[in-house]
Length: 308
Image (cartoon, rainbow, N blue to C red; front, side, top):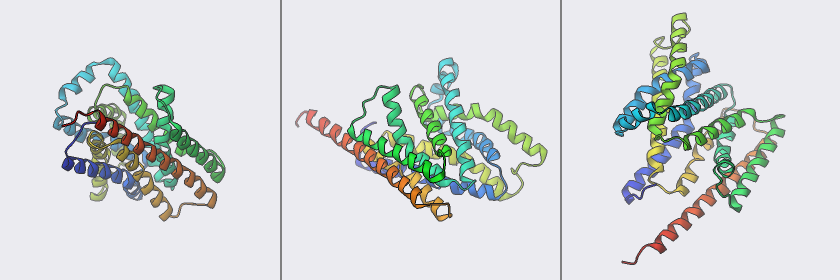
């Protein structure tokens, strides 16, 4: 993360809030498309197709053309990005199906778990140290999952699948020598092949919605910005604002999702409420730990700086 001027820091904070707000309201976008008769597979397929032009624009705007060519020529990079494309495609498919099947609360739970799962994965795979607060956060989240299992009469498979697929995606991308914009473009290019084939088949069979009406076409074209814009905002903000701020911001999305699920009348029993209380507790401990670590780093930098 680079140091930035106060004005740029405020813009970065706004970009971070903006990306999580967009991710939070995405269920409403996919539900609007569902009401027009689009299946989850049609939405996913169009998402892979229409994200490509915008992702290419972002790569060119960032001056990452050479990085893109180098990544395309590297078998190792392409192998990792093929795996990350598979994981993010799986995540998109599960998420869109879930929000259009009245399971927004389960998606919310999954995205609350992701930061805590990432912390555990960092310890197991990258040998990162987890402090006492981190252990408490993971323990609270695990207990919340157990209670959620009791509440719904079985494992919260949607939540766990979303958390594991996106968590795995983050682990893979951590190993890839490619920026967010370049990586996203290559992932979408890899997914576009089967996605475009499915879209063409739907259109040829008369079941596709592209061109069927102005609203349907507009929503399908919106899949590009819905996919690419939040990720680019996140990438720009993450380099300019402290980890503590990101620690708080990343819970905006699932909190909005939680509100959407409750207001849409999804089952929210007392036992399920208790499970979310534990998840929220884990999230709060995680955010506090990130804030405290950031303060410690800032203090150490200030003490190490030479006096004027």
